[in-house]
Length: 557
Image 1 (cartoon, rainbow, N blue to C red):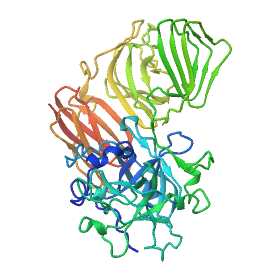
Image 2: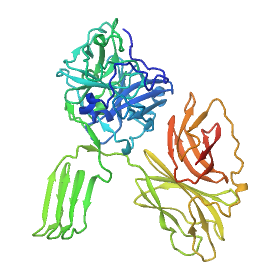
Image 3: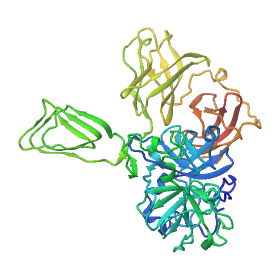
């Protein structure tokens, strides 16, 4: 037995796969543009690569289950150290490098067995809807039809596609190690217009899709005396652990797929894939408002709609729900309206949507006393906040945190502000998959006068010499980072250079020493920041992992 597709070093990335490999955006991938969005590159310890697939489950709840190979990740500590990168692909056939900015760090190991070389992980959080993820469908039958593809990241390169036109056969080449024949063998990858896709190191854990575009296994590797590169593509043999075998392999939840991919105990053998529902699509929708004449509206819910409203004559209204539509007492559809109610699967799963925030028009709510005026924001998709107020002498005078419900969040009541003064306000709103920070200056005017918001990032009248004014630069060896490009227009990347990645915070401080941006609890090896709205000048990027604080200078033109 040999592992031909073990992790490759991280240096083996763009352009380092074999010459015969085929980019996913060549013509061979035209019919696989949906499924490709489920396939991710894995980077472990910042040093090595594999591939894996985001999978759907019968609850259709969008839980981010991820299938890859046991020989890639077999312990919780390994899962903790992994970064999962979405949509790393060349934008064209044989084109330039792709972006690695869409990623998730860390996962929980749910189930694994070496007998079929599988591991099922659950990401630390759902991928953002802006990643446009696809939750791939699966087929756990043993006998499969002819043809299909493998989508993978050979040598950690941009996403590739390899094509076969045979029925996967039960593998015997490693039967002396795993006599239950838990693998499919693909021994006839075919030449296509843009190459002869095979599998390589870094392809391990990648999905085998059947001709119905469903995942049937994950890549283990080759067999003795069979190559795993472009030297002789006709002799590239690839073995895939069967979902059929992994389904009930160990008879407990930590060693089989069934408990996780079929939590409803439906006992189905095939499940279709699903995209993330459009933002605003609810599981349960309660409609109570009157719909007036001339209005055309469509209401959708993934599960249930309850309606107790009136639809006026001349209105055109459609209710669509995945499971049930309940017309409750008080519901009226007047003569002359067009009303359609139908059960229709949305074929989508709940997603995680970006946080957006806006300072409320009044700044502080107008109580008028300047002391108990609430600082309020209009928010969407946020579930929690952290708040800090720093006075003009650089002292933290107030901090709080709490949950967000609805579309308005009031985070401060002006406690302690009994005279004209200035505060730097730093607020972080978050949900399970995204953080967004808002920073601005606020004047608090006591003695019966109303508080007011100043322009964002305006440091006029601030005693900056006492507020983060002296910022040393140093470069410790155990935790370091690079900022590029520098100078920049405000759109730049931060790459962590560390063998042991631990959660860290990132702050941006202007040349006057004012903290104007902060993100906390980051686990990613690389993050992208877009602050093209900042004025030109010198800024300082400060990272802190709890043990080491590093500051570097960046110039925004």
